[in-house]
Length: 319
Length: 246
Image 1 (spheres, one colour):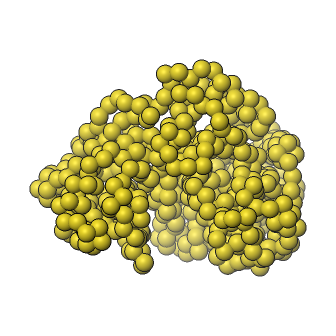
Image 2 (spheres, chains in turn red, brown):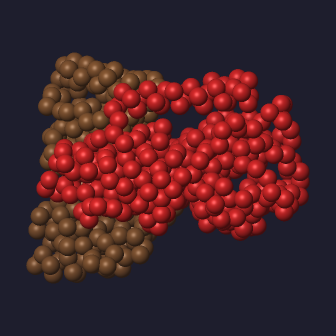
Image 3 (cartoon, chains in turn yellow, blue):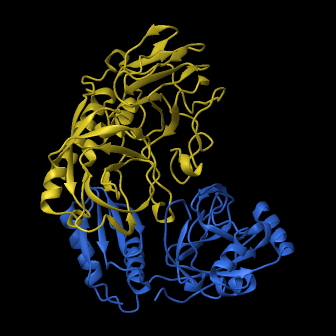
């Protein structure tokens, strides 16, 4: 696959590089990992196979090999040889086809999966691109014009081809509710301030990338200070720096940070957090850990069911 | 060592933070590293990753394998079982540094700020064995404890765009070395030809949190020799084995 236009920020991502955070390697990985897994399901890959993630503006690329592709996530008006194609279906590609995306009309991250995966070496167990430290993915960086992405084991066709279609599509609303669990440093804020955080609207600013989403709204005031002795961070942590404007830490976050985290978004809602565009309004709804873990178990079962509808059996390797 | 007096803070639905205190202190930090190595020994199913920091251990887990309540029980069980004689092994890495000149352009400033000669700054900087409290910010970026307080120097008001890998700097009361090219605001006093991060090595990052670093002054000739070996991938950084974090 030859890149004719690289888009804005197009990187190879899988579910992330785990086991190396103690050394300071951020896990990185797909921001909307659910859309990523669904794209893989459509083309018969393992759910965790590496895909191409495109932010806000997609690529233009020419294929040199027959394969099956699927596009999920943000709506970037995909076209093949000038003709519109849909998100959420398997598409056959013949050599010479040109796939072209535009700017997003809804959502932030769009995913392109190819049957058999991209031919990208595993670095420390993952194909994800660590942009800040140039590790993994395609030469540790975002795609550039002229890059040639090889396909690992492309297949020109798949069984039950006409059935390879998602039966539900994501909705990109301008008003988003994300569920979150208070803490780990909720004790640094008064009950009134916590209650305020879980009721006020925040808007998504332009300062939004793979590292974090900066929000704007009524400042969150700590009891004394929001500085802490640096501790570890997770995807979805909502940190409160000194100005009181919260930041959601995303896939490319630093592994450690020195600001209090008032709450943490539940895993099941991270894909929707990742798809928020500047100008969106977000509110946080408080849930308990038990509720969040029940929701996650349901989400997992529901994805596995969707995968089986497309591919008959769910691969064992994805624990 | 007894791993008592900790609290478990939930961090969303897929991580917990085990906090041993709220101070930067070698004793507290040793507990973090001890629990960290205990967990890696026990191999509890569902634990995906750990991040040891100054006073807390972040444990990332898959709640579809182990739920919050069960994980807390496991942590309590592990820490309650007598831990006499158990502590994380520690190594002391000998990191060669060429101080001053083009390798450490801020050495004159640091010396003037401290009211010391450049030679005295070097002597005081390479005297202690620095504890690596934690790694963060970038892969292999070490947060070291134990710098001589007389060497404290404020950071640059305008960070440099690019600091070369191996640079040794002082920022406030902290010192450390940059594992890879990066922007940064620390005062640079020297540079090491040793590569803390080398993707060709089995252990990409030379040291772990809980290890120690000793800076060893070298001259330019030695710098170039080690640099050539490091570039060729044949340099092995010497370290002293043994000892315990506390």
